[in-house]
Image 1: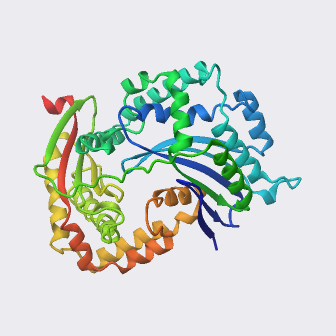
Image 2: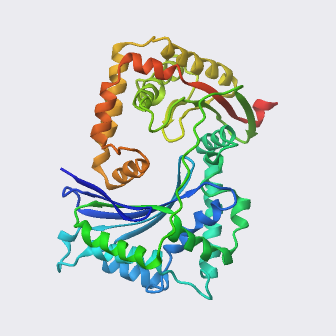
Image 3: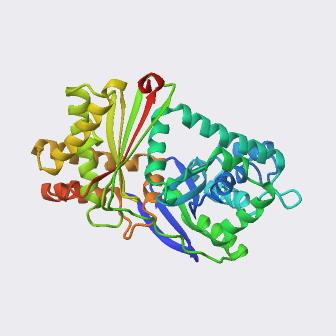
Length: 426
Protein backbone atom coordinates (compact mmCIF):
# COMPACT_ATOMS: atom_id res chain seq x y z
CA UNK A 1 0.00 0.00 0.00
CA UNK A 2 1.49 3.33 -1.04
CA UNK A 3 2.00 6.10 1.55
CA UNK A 4 1.08 9.43 -0.05
CA UNK A 5 1.86 12.81 1.48
CA UNK A 6 1.94 16.39 0.18
CA UNK A 7 3.35 19.32 2.14
CA UNK A 8 4.77 22.77 1.60
CA UNK A 9 8.52 23.35 1.23
CA UNK A 10 8.25 27.14 1.06
CA UNK A 11 6.05 29.72 -0.59
CA UNK A 12 4.81 28.22 -3.89
CA UNK A 13 6.91 25.03 -3.66
CA UNK A 14 5.26 21.70 -2.79
CA UNK A 15 6.73 18.33 -1.92
CA UNK A 16 4.80 15.16 -2.71
CA UNK A 17 6.06 11.71 -1.69
CA UNK A 18 4.53 8.42 -2.82
CA UNK A 19 6.34 5.68 -0.92
CA UNK A 20 5.77 2.18 -2.29
CA UNK A 21 7.97 -0.82 -1.40
CA UNK A 22 6.96 -2.72 -4.55
CA UNK A 23 9.42 -0.68 -6.62
CA UNK A 24 13.14 -1.43 -6.85
CA UNK A 25 13.88 2.03 -8.16
CA UNK A 26 13.35 5.59 -6.97
CA UNK A 27 12.39 8.61 -9.07
CA UNK A 28 12.81 12.19 -7.89
CA UNK A 29 11.61 15.04 -10.07
CA UNK A 30 11.03 18.75 -9.82
CA UNK A 31 8.57 20.57 -12.06
CA UNK A 32 8.36 24.35 -12.49
CA UNK A 33 5.14 25.92 -13.81
CA UNK A 34 5.45 28.99 -16.04
CA UNK A 35 2.72 30.86 -17.94
CA UNK A 36 2.68 29.98 -21.63
CA UNK A 37 3.71 33.23 -23.35
CA UNK A 38 5.10 33.72 -26.84
CA UNK A 39 7.91 36.01 -25.68
CA UNK A 40 9.32 33.58 -23.11
CA UNK A 41 8.24 30.09 -24.20
CA UNK A 42 11.48 29.10 -25.95
CA UNK A 43 13.77 30.68 -23.34
CA UNK A 44 11.96 28.69 -20.65
CA UNK A 45 11.93 25.50 -22.73
CA UNK A 46 15.70 25.35 -23.21
CA UNK A 47 16.46 25.69 -19.47
CA UNK A 48 15.83 22.06 -18.30
CA UNK A 49 18.13 20.77 -21.04
CA UNK A 50 20.89 23.29 -20.25
CA UNK A 51 20.66 22.59 -16.52
CA UNK A 52 21.06 18.83 -16.96
CA UNK A 53 24.30 19.22 -18.91
CA UNK A 54 26.55 20.28 -16.02
CA UNK A 55 26.93 22.08 -12.70
CA UNK A 56 29.87 23.70 -10.94
CA UNK A 57 30.44 20.43 -9.08
CA UNK A 58 30.19 18.34 -12.26
CA UNK A 59 31.41 20.78 -14.93
CA UNK A 60 31.18 18.56 -18.02
CA UNK A 61 29.48 15.47 -19.40
CA UNK A 62 32.38 13.22 -18.39
CA UNK A 63 32.30 14.25 -14.71
CA UNK A 64 28.53 14.13 -14.62
CA UNK A 65 28.30 10.71 -16.24
CA UNK A 66 31.05 9.35 -13.99
CA UNK A 67 28.97 10.36 -10.98
CA UNK A 68 25.80 8.84 -12.47
CA UNK A 69 27.76 5.61 -13.04
CA UNK A 70 28.85 5.68 -9.38
CA UNK A 71 25.17 5.87 -8.48
CA UNK A 72 24.62 2.44 -10.03
CA UNK A 73 23.81 3.89 -13.44
CA UNK A 74 21.19 6.44 -12.40
CA UNK A 75 19.47 8.25 -15.29
CA UNK A 76 18.99 11.99 -15.61
CA UNK A 77 16.16 13.44 -17.74
CA UNK A 78 14.79 16.82 -18.79
CA UNK A 79 11.38 17.49 -20.26
CA UNK A 80 8.99 20.27 -21.30
CA UNK A 81 5.23 19.82 -21.59
CA UNK A 82 1.98 21.77 -21.38
CA UNK A 83 -0.55 21.54 -18.56
CA UNK A 84 -3.52 23.65 -19.53
CA UNK A 85 -2.23 27.17 -20.18
CA UNK A 86 0.99 26.47 -18.30
CA UNK A 87 4.42 25.35 -19.48
CA UNK A 88 5.95 22.67 -17.26
CA UNK A 89 9.76 22.52 -17.04
CA UNK A 90 10.94 19.24 -15.52
CA UNK A 91 14.19 17.68 -14.34
CA UNK A 92 14.24 14.18 -12.91
CA UNK A 93 16.54 11.37 -11.84
CA UNK A 94 15.75 7.66 -11.64
CA UNK A 95 17.95 5.14 -9.87
CA UNK A 96 18.25 2.11 -7.66
CA UNK A 97 16.33 2.06 -4.36
CA UNK A 98 18.41 2.50 -1.20
CA UNK A 99 17.92 -1.05 0.03
CA UNK A 100 19.78 -2.49 -2.98
CA UNK A 101 22.96 -0.42 -2.49
CA UNK A 102 25.87 -2.81 -1.94
CA UNK A 103 27.52 -0.79 0.83
CA UNK A 104 24.43 0.73 2.41
CA UNK A 105 24.74 4.07 0.57
CA UNK A 106 21.83 6.48 0.94
CA UNK A 107 21.25 6.71 -2.79
CA UNK A 108 18.05 8.77 -2.62
CA UNK A 109 19.96 11.49 -0.77
CA UNK A 110 22.66 11.36 -3.43
CA UNK A 111 19.99 11.78 -6.12
CA UNK A 112 18.46 14.84 -4.48
CA UNK A 113 21.90 16.45 -3.90
CA UNK A 114 22.76 15.94 -7.55
CA UNK A 115 19.48 17.52 -8.66
CA UNK A 116 20.04 20.46 -6.32
CA UNK A 117 23.59 20.87 -7.64
CA UNK A 118 22.36 21.03 -11.23
CA UNK A 119 19.38 23.23 -10.48
CA UNK A 120 20.72 25.74 -7.96
CA UNK A 121 24.44 25.81 -8.81
CA UNK A 122 24.74 25.51 -12.61
CA UNK A 123 27.97 25.94 -14.53
CA UNK A 124 28.21 29.56 -15.68
CA UNK A 125 31.03 31.13 -17.70
CA UNK A 126 31.26 34.91 -17.42
CA UNK A 127 27.80 34.82 -15.86
CA UNK A 128 26.26 32.88 -18.75
CA UNK A 129 25.56 29.27 -19.65
CA UNK A 130 28.44 27.85 -21.77
CA UNK A 131 28.07 28.69 -25.45
CA UNK A 132 28.75 25.20 -26.84
CA UNK A 133 25.94 23.62 -24.78
CA UNK A 134 23.60 26.51 -25.58
CA UNK A 135 24.08 26.16 -29.34
CA UNK A 136 23.72 22.38 -29.16
CA UNK A 137 20.46 22.54 -27.20
CA UNK A 138 19.03 25.16 -29.58
CA UNK A 139 19.81 22.89 -32.51
CA UNK A 140 18.24 19.86 -30.80
CA UNK A 141 15.05 21.77 -30.00
CA UNK A 142 14.73 22.77 -33.65
CA UNK A 143 15.31 19.16 -34.70
CA UNK A 144 12.58 18.05 -32.29
CA UNK A 145 10.12 20.39 -34.04
CA UNK A 146 11.24 18.97 -37.40
CA UNK A 147 10.59 15.44 -36.12
CA UNK A 148 7.12 16.43 -34.93
CA UNK A 149 6.36 17.90 -38.35
CA UNK A 150 7.38 14.61 -39.98
CA UNK A 151 4.99 12.71 -37.67
CA UNK A 152 1.84 13.81 -39.51
CA UNK A 153 -0.57 12.32 -36.99
CA UNK A 154 1.01 14.31 -34.15
CA UNK A 155 1.48 17.38 -36.33
CA UNK A 156 -2.17 17.45 -37.40
CA UNK A 157 -3.37 17.18 -33.79
CA UNK A 158 -1.11 20.00 -32.61
CA UNK A 159 -1.96 22.15 -35.63
CA UNK A 160 -5.69 21.77 -34.90
CA UNK A 161 -5.13 22.74 -31.25
CA UNK A 162 -3.07 25.73 -32.42
CA UNK A 163 -5.85 26.95 -34.73
CA UNK A 164 -8.59 26.20 -32.21
CA UNK A 165 -6.81 28.00 -29.35
CA UNK A 166 -5.16 30.75 -31.42
CA UNK A 167 -6.23 33.46 -28.96
CA UNK A 168 -5.32 31.46 -25.87
CA UNK A 169 -1.97 30.57 -24.27
CA UNK A 170 -2.69 26.89 -24.97
CA UNK A 171 -2.34 27.62 -28.69
CA UNK A 172 1.40 28.20 -28.19
CA UNK A 173 3.64 25.14 -28.70
CA UNK A 174 5.60 23.93 -25.68
CA UNK A 175 8.92 24.83 -27.38
CA UNK A 176 7.54 27.79 -29.34
CA UNK A 177 8.38 27.93 -33.04
CA UNK A 178 11.70 27.47 -34.83
CA UNK A 179 11.80 31.25 -35.23
CA UNK A 180 11.31 31.66 -31.46
CA UNK A 181 14.12 29.17 -30.82
CA UNK A 182 16.52 30.98 -33.14
CA UNK A 183 15.74 34.24 -31.32
CA UNK A 184 16.86 32.93 -27.90
CA UNK A 185 19.70 35.07 -26.53
CA UNK A 186 22.26 33.37 -24.31
CA UNK A 187 22.77 36.53 -22.27
CA UNK A 188 19.10 36.45 -21.18
CA UNK A 189 19.07 32.88 -19.90
CA UNK A 190 20.77 33.46 -16.55
CA UNK A 191 18.02 35.89 -15.61
CA UNK A 192 15.34 33.47 -16.88
CA UNK A 193 16.87 30.72 -14.71
CA UNK A 194 16.98 32.98 -11.65
CA UNK A 195 13.39 34.00 -12.20
CA UNK A 196 12.38 30.34 -12.38
CA UNK A 197 13.93 29.28 -9.09
CA UNK A 198 12.95 32.50 -7.27
CA UNK A 199 9.37 32.97 -8.35
CA UNK A 200 7.88 29.97 -10.22
CA UNK A 201 5.47 27.55 -8.60
CA UNK A 202 7.16 24.18 -8.24
CA UNK A 203 6.18 20.61 -7.44
CA UNK A 204 8.78 18.12 -6.17
CA UNK A 205 7.69 14.49 -6.52
CA UNK A 206 9.46 11.55 -4.88
CA UNK A 207 8.30 8.08 -5.88
CA UNK A 208 9.35 4.58 -4.94
CA UNK A 209 10.89 2.90 -1.92
CA UNK A 210 12.87 5.57 -0.07
CA UNK A 211 12.77 7.72 3.04
CA UNK A 212 11.53 11.10 1.74
CA UNK A 213 12.81 13.14 4.72
CA UNK A 214 16.44 13.66 3.55
CA UNK A 215 15.15 14.62 0.09
CA UNK A 216 12.71 17.10 1.64
CA UNK A 217 15.52 18.63 3.70
CA UNK A 218 17.88 18.98 0.72
CA UNK A 219 15.31 20.87 -1.33
CA UNK A 220 14.13 22.92 1.67
CA UNK A 221 17.70 24.08 2.35
CA UNK A 222 18.29 24.83 -1.33
CA UNK A 223 15.17 26.97 -1.71
CA UNK A 224 15.89 28.69 1.63
CA UNK A 225 19.30 29.75 0.35
CA UNK A 226 17.98 31.32 -2.88
CA UNK A 227 15.03 33.10 -1.25
CA UNK A 228 11.62 33.27 -2.82
CA UNK A 229 9.36 35.90 -4.36
CA UNK A 230 6.59 33.57 -5.47
CA UNK A 231 4.22 34.70 -8.23
CA UNK A 232 0.87 32.90 -8.47
CA UNK A 233 0.40 31.25 -11.88
CA UNK A 234 -2.81 32.13 -13.76
CA UNK A 235 -5.67 29.64 -14.08
CA UNK A 236 -6.21 28.01 -17.46
CA UNK A 237 -8.74 29.78 -19.67
CA UNK A 238 -11.75 27.54 -20.38
CA UNK A 239 -14.05 28.45 -23.29
CA UNK A 240 -17.44 26.72 -23.29
CA UNK A 241 -19.30 28.20 -26.26
CA UNK A 242 -18.57 28.59 -29.98
CA UNK A 243 -20.10 31.24 -32.27
CA UNK A 244 -19.17 29.60 -35.57
CA UNK A 245 -17.00 26.51 -36.13
CA UNK A 246 -13.70 27.14 -37.91
CA UNK A 247 -12.60 25.02 -40.87
CA UNK A 248 -9.09 24.89 -42.28
CA UNK A 249 -7.43 22.68 -44.85
CA UNK A 250 -3.70 22.46 -45.48
CA UNK A 251 -1.91 20.39 -48.08
CA UNK A 252 1.40 18.64 -47.96
CA UNK A 253 3.08 15.55 -49.32
CA UNK A 254 1.16 12.83 -47.46
CA UNK A 255 -0.30 9.56 -48.72
CA UNK A 256 -2.93 9.38 -45.96
CA UNK A 257 -4.92 12.49 -45.07
CA UNK A 258 -5.57 13.52 -41.49
CA UNK A 259 -8.86 14.83 -40.16
CA UNK A 260 -8.81 16.37 -36.67
CA UNK A 261 -11.95 17.83 -35.10
CA UNK A 262 -11.73 19.97 -31.97
CA UNK A 263 -14.73 20.33 -29.67
CA UNK A 264 -15.34 22.50 -26.60
CA UNK A 265 -16.45 20.12 -23.86
CA UNK A 266 -18.22 22.69 -21.70
CA UNK A 267 -16.47 21.62 -18.51
CA UNK A 268 -12.95 21.37 -17.09
CA UNK A 269 -11.28 20.67 -13.76
CA UNK A 270 -12.55 21.11 -11.05
CA UNK A 271 -16.12 20.97 -12.50
CA UNK A 272 -18.13 18.10 -10.97
CA UNK A 273 -19.11 17.00 -14.49
CA UNK A 274 -15.52 16.09 -15.45
CA UNK A 275 -15.84 12.35 -14.53
CA UNK A 276 -18.97 12.11 -16.71
CA UNK A 277 -17.14 13.83 -19.58
CA UNK A 278 -14.21 11.40 -19.27
CA UNK A 279 -16.62 8.49 -19.48
CA UNK A 280 -18.45 10.11 -22.39
CA UNK A 281 -15.16 10.43 -24.32
CA UNK A 282 -14.36 6.77 -23.59
CA UNK A 283 -17.76 5.61 -24.88
CA UNK A 284 -17.66 7.97 -27.88
CA UNK A 285 -14.13 7.32 -29.11
CA UNK A 286 -11.70 6.36 -26.37
CA UNK A 287 -11.72 2.57 -26.46
CA UNK A 288 -11.80 -0.35 -28.97
CA UNK A 289 -15.51 -0.71 -28.10
CA UNK A 290 -16.30 2.96 -28.70
CA UNK A 291 -18.84 4.24 -31.20
CA UNK A 292 -16.19 5.87 -33.38
CA UNK A 293 -14.05 2.76 -33.58
CA UNK A 294 -16.87 0.29 -34.13
CA UNK A 295 -18.89 2.40 -36.57
CA UNK A 296 -16.63 4.87 -38.37
CA UNK A 297 -13.62 2.58 -38.63
CA UNK A 298 -14.86 -1.02 -38.48
CA UNK A 299 -18.41 -0.96 -39.86
CA UNK A 300 -18.10 1.83 -42.46
CA UNK A 301 -14.34 1.56 -43.10
CA UNK A 302 -14.03 5.34 -43.41
CA UNK A 303 -10.81 5.69 -41.41
CA UNK A 304 -7.55 3.92 -40.72
CA UNK A 305 -7.89 5.08 -37.13
CA UNK A 306 -10.46 7.21 -35.33
CA UNK A 307 -10.42 8.10 -31.64
CA UNK A 308 -11.26 10.81 -29.15
CA UNK A 309 -9.50 12.14 -26.06
CA UNK A 310 -10.59 14.62 -23.41
CA UNK A 311 -8.28 17.28 -21.98
CA UNK A 312 -9.76 18.01 -18.51
CA UNK A 313 -7.46 20.98 -17.83
CA UNK A 314 -8.64 22.92 -20.91
CA UNK A 315 -12.07 21.38 -21.48
CA UNK A 316 -11.18 20.20 -24.99
CA UNK A 317 -12.39 17.04 -26.71
CA UNK A 318 -10.25 16.15 -29.71
CA UNK A 319 -11.16 13.57 -32.38
CA UNK A 320 -8.35 12.50 -34.69
CA UNK A 321 -8.49 10.19 -37.67
CA UNK A 322 -6.47 9.04 -40.66
CA UNK A 323 -8.54 8.87 -43.85
CA UNK A 324 -8.40 8.50 -47.62
CA UNK A 325 -8.80 11.86 -49.34
CA UNK A 326 -12.09 10.83 -50.91
CA UNK A 327 -13.58 9.86 -47.53
CA UNK A 328 -12.83 13.01 -45.55
CA UNK A 329 -16.30 14.59 -45.69
CA UNK A 330 -18.10 11.28 -45.11
CA UNK A 331 -15.89 10.61 -42.11
CA UNK A 332 -16.51 14.09 -40.72
CA UNK A 333 -20.29 13.68 -41.05
CA UNK A 334 -20.25 10.24 -39.46
CA UNK A 335 -18.10 11.44 -36.53
CA UNK A 336 -20.66 14.18 -35.89
CA UNK A 337 -23.53 11.71 -36.30
CA UNK A 338 -22.07 9.37 -33.68
CA UNK A 339 -21.80 12.27 -31.24
CA UNK A 340 -25.47 13.04 -31.84
CA UNK A 341 -26.29 9.40 -31.08
CA UNK A 342 -24.63 9.72 -27.67
CA UNK A 343 -26.45 13.01 -27.06
CA UNK A 344 -29.76 11.26 -27.87
CA UNK A 345 -29.02 8.46 -25.39
CA UNK A 346 -28.69 5.92 -28.21
CA UNK A 347 -26.23 3.45 -26.71
CA UNK A 348 -26.63 0.19 -24.87
CA UNK A 349 -25.94 -0.74 -21.26
CA UNK A 350 -23.16 -2.97 -22.59
CA UNK A 351 -21.57 0.07 -24.31
CA UNK A 352 -21.72 1.97 -21.03
CA UNK A 353 -20.29 -0.89 -19.00
CA UNK A 354 -17.48 -1.50 -21.50
CA UNK A 355 -16.48 2.17 -21.35
CA UNK A 356 -16.44 2.11 -17.54
CA UNK A 357 -14.37 -1.08 -17.42
CA UNK A 358 -11.85 0.20 -19.94
CA UNK A 359 -11.41 3.55 -18.23
CA UNK A 360 -11.21 2.08 -14.72
CA UNK A 361 -8.72 -0.55 -15.88
CA UNK A 362 -6.45 2.19 -17.20
CA UNK A 363 -6.60 3.90 -13.79
CA UNK A 364 -5.83 0.66 -11.97
CA UNK A 365 -2.60 0.26 -13.99
CA UNK A 366 -1.32 3.77 -13.20
CA UNK A 367 0.40 2.50 -10.05
CA UNK A 368 2.35 -0.11 -12.04
CA UNK A 369 5.12 2.28 -13.08
CA UNK A 370 6.88 5.30 -11.59
CA UNK A 371 6.47 7.24 -14.84
CA UNK A 372 2.71 6.75 -14.85
CA UNK A 373 2.41 7.68 -11.19
CA UNK A 374 4.43 10.83 -11.72
CA UNK A 375 2.30 11.83 -14.70
CA UNK A 376 -0.87 11.19 -12.73
CA UNK A 377 0.07 13.31 -9.73
CA UNK A 378 1.63 16.03 -11.86
CA UNK A 379 -1.69 16.36 -13.69
CA UNK A 380 -3.41 16.67 -10.28
CA UNK A 381 -1.23 19.57 -9.12
CA UNK A 382 -4.06 22.06 -9.44
CA UNK A 383 -6.90 19.71 -8.45
CA UNK A 384 -8.50 20.21 -5.10
CA UNK A 385 -8.72 17.66 -3.66
CA UNK A 386 -6.11 15.62 -5.54
CA UNK A 387 -7.56 12.15 -6.10
CA UNK A 388 -5.75 8.82 -6.31
CA UNK A 389 -6.33 6.62 -9.39
CA UNK A 390 -8.51 4.34 -7.25
CA UNK A 391 -10.67 7.27 -6.12
CA UNK A 392 -10.99 8.44 -9.72
CA UNK A 393 -12.04 4.95 -10.82
CA UNK A 394 -14.72 4.90 -8.12
CA UNK A 395 -16.08 8.21 -9.40
CA UNK A 396 -16.19 6.89 -12.97
CA UNK A 397 -18.03 3.78 -11.83
CA UNK A 398 -20.65 5.95 -10.13
CA UNK A 399 -21.43 8.02 -13.26
CA UNK A 400 -25.01 7.41 -14.43
CA UNK A 401 -26.33 7.17 -17.98
CA UNK A 402 -28.18 10.45 -17.47
CA UNK A 403 -25.03 12.24 -16.33
CA UNK A 404 -23.11 10.95 -19.36
CA UNK A 405 -25.84 12.17 -21.76
CA UNK A 406 -25.91 15.55 -19.99
CA UNK A 407 -22.13 15.81 -20.46
CA UNK A 408 -22.41 14.88 -24.16
CA UNK A 409 -24.96 17.62 -24.73
CA UNK A 410 -22.45 20.24 -23.58
CA UNK A 411 -20.03 19.32 -26.39
CA UNK A 412 -19.90 21.77 -29.33
CA UNK A 413 -17.77 21.69 -32.47
CA UNK A 414 -15.10 24.39 -32.59
CA UNK A 415 -12.60 23.51 -35.33
CA UNK A 416 -12.28 21.10 -38.26
CA UNK A 417 -8.72 20.70 -39.53
CA UNK A 418 -7.79 18.70 -42.62
CA UNK A 419 -4.26 17.83 -43.67
CA UNK A 420 -4.54 16.46 -47.17
CA UNK A 421 -2.25 15.26 -49.92
CA UNK A 422 -1.49 17.62 -52.80
CA UNK A 423 -3.56 15.43 -55.12
CA UNK A 424 -6.68 16.01 -52.99
CA UNK A 425 -6.51 19.78 -53.45
CA UNK A 426 -6.16 19.42 -57.23
